[in-house]
Length: 369
Image (cartoon, rainbow, N blue to C red):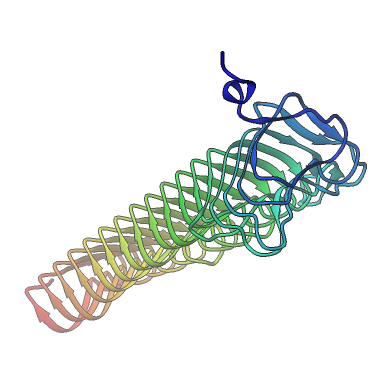
């Protein structure tokens, strides 16, 4: 015969309607939904805790959103913590104009004091909190995965490694981490869609006011912003799409590879080195780079492509330069309906065309026409 500890080596949480404080290391699980009328639902005040919500829901009926559903309270840091499998539901709503208010919890999961280490949060749904959804820290031993957060007045998810997660309708940054992958984040007020201090991969980010995606390296990402940058990569943007409705870049990177950017009144793609990229803008430069190779840029009233050196690239504009190379253009084509098709200090094997303006202007012409 097996002992009870051998059959279920975990402690059951059976409280109803009152705060649960976990002060001893161990494994704990819910046996039912837990609703509190004020304050926190569960406080974890020690290290070495596994908490399984077991598919149940933590909720609060507090008239004003206060308290935390799961609060990591240890002043020395909550280390080696796992929280999985359940729902946190609160009553805060967005009035449609970015004003968040209502009942329930202030935050879903929140860590105070010294930043925790070795923390994993997985398979949770958090809805309707006034300040934070899942707020931990962004060191690389904190993992948030397969979580869904929606309608949060502040930051949606803060973790070190964030993957396979969604944060929507957040008043501040939707997802903030060191490495973010396979995620979707939407900020509806004043934050980033996704902010990754290191790498964002296979992500979608959207923001009303800041960057859709902001990362050191962005791979296979899509970013959209109303008044900020669509995809903003400090180092490399590869296989990315960015869009900006305001006067900002759609894609901005030191190196842009196989990217596309579209902006209403800013630059489509802006990079030190652009390769195999497409940029378009209604009124600004379609593609702007120090070096443009195998690129296409188009603009309505701005410049199609503006670069120091351009190679095997095509630029078009309605009324400005199709392609403008301040140094060398090699194997390029520029077209403008009423402006200059192609302008370069040295044009080698290039072609310029214009209906009403000048086809080609160059100081040194080598096999160009």
